[in-house]
Length: 474
Image (cartoon, rainbow, N blue to C red; front, side, top):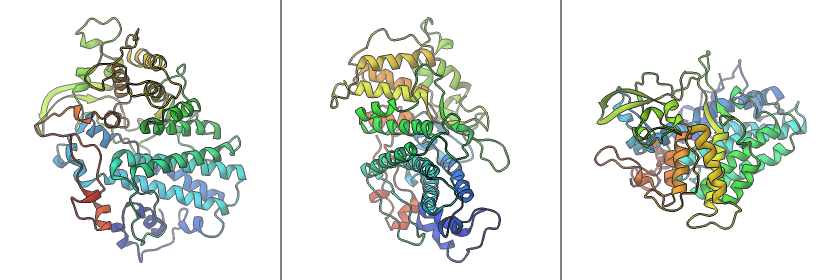
């Protein structure tokens, strides 16, 4: 239980339309940390750390852009038989409130932790630096979750302290990414001055990344991910070198959001054993390459990732979609969802190296296509059971115009499927959204989400105009 004041401040991140109930309902919380204990007087070590613990919960709720981006990128569909309006091609008609609201609630909570630190008692200076570095990293990740979805719409940089104040301005995409990078770099400085331990009680999904040095490797990995998306490839290679990338270690090594069926905990909403509503796109079955030594046409020897992550269902039709595949990625209500793993870092390094010497080379950044091929082959062989490519296939093809880039995107697509919407994010980055599957007459691929309805209403923006207008489909 939290005070009503705490809830109102968290709600400030999702629009002023929720503020009407926040004027007269203040009541003391007799059972948990109160907002007043953190923002007035001298916050205690216990109160700050308990609040920091909440960042794992709020950030998990926001989560990577798995569902929304996964629907848009044709990784899978939510075809809930009891909720026809959930058919995902139309989700941007109302914006993506869920990702927006959860992310800004997490950002507000991170701000409360950060603002409490200067006057908090019971910490060493190194511990305060560690908590600050942790909170700023989580804050950057939550802002990344928002802008990945909204992209050209932009996003809010900060949650207002006063829940009754006017809604904050919507910053441009470039401004949002600049803030993300600044937060990650500031966090790096704090973590470098945090000593040998972090006082945070980490969730199980952060196992191996709970000290200042190892958590900083996670921080640098997130920055490398942003670098690659923005085309800052020299920076990406530098940040990857400071991350936990290691082709000799398990590809699954990394940081995860964790879930459980314990009382009061959250379960993994992507678990759909039927499947009842979450179905995989059939293009994965069509596009899966064959394992090393397989006879052409032997579909039982497809890419190991396909065999592990997808499962057949008896073909049927719903809402005009022909369905014959479900997911086998999250096999229980307690299955973790990756935030960042070694497999993705290796693919990001391949992408950065390839971009340094592409058709339209970026400024020199020290990368080579040979280095990219090595990393791609690592993933092909270890993750897919595929034969290593003997030579660089060079330019050509009808997708991106570079066959090695096509191969890279194929491996990202199968290695990271149903984790973060990577197929849509990559298609947007490389300008090939229109080449994603169009399953029904008149269907389009949307490039980003507009501002959520609550945010439009709070700002007095008429429906269908400005930041509240539907993007053009491709």
